[in-house]
Length: 179
Image (tube, rainbow, N blue to C red; front, side, top):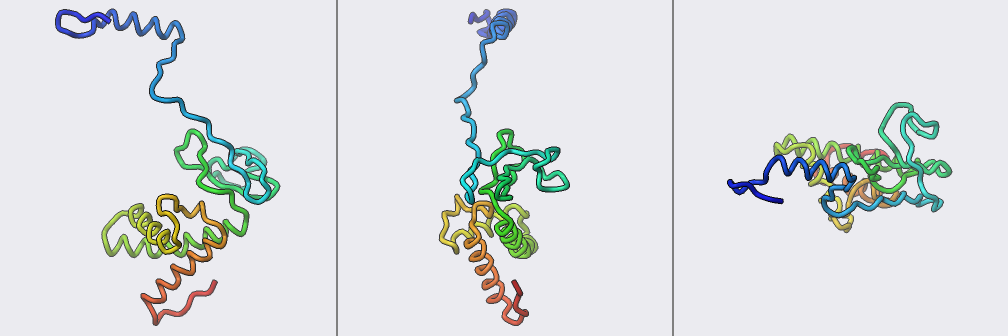
C-alpha cells in the first residue's frame, strides 16, 4: 500500500484494494480457525446426543428453555450456554435422577448465596461463584473445573450433605431438613 504525503493510506487506493479483495472472495482472516465442537456423548448408553430446539418433537419441555442436547433413548439432556453460537453444552447429559439432584443442590445453595449478598453487599454472580469455589474445595475437586452441571449423582449428594452440615453447624437450634 502506498502512503500519501501526510504518511497516511490513501483512502481511494484502500477502497479499491478492499473492494478487489471482496470481489475475489478472499476471506479476511482474523485469528485461528475455530474447531467444531464434538457432539456430547451420553454417559448412560454411549450414544451421541442430538441437538434439539423448542419447535421439534423431541424437545422435552413444554415451554422454550433454549436448545438442548438430548439422548432420547435414556431421556437424558443438558442445556447450552445462553449466548453460545456453537451450542456449547453446559455440562454432562443428565437423566431424571441427576436432574433432580442438581435442582436440589441449586435449591440448597441459593439461600447461602442470598445471605452472602445481604451480608457482604456483593452481587449474586460473585456470591454464587464464591459458593461454588468453597464447595469445590470441600469436595476436593479442582475449582476451575467445578460446575454443578458436571457433577455426578454421588457428587451432588455429597455436596448437598456438605451444605446441610454447614448450615446445621451455623444454626444448631434449627430443625433438621428432610431429604
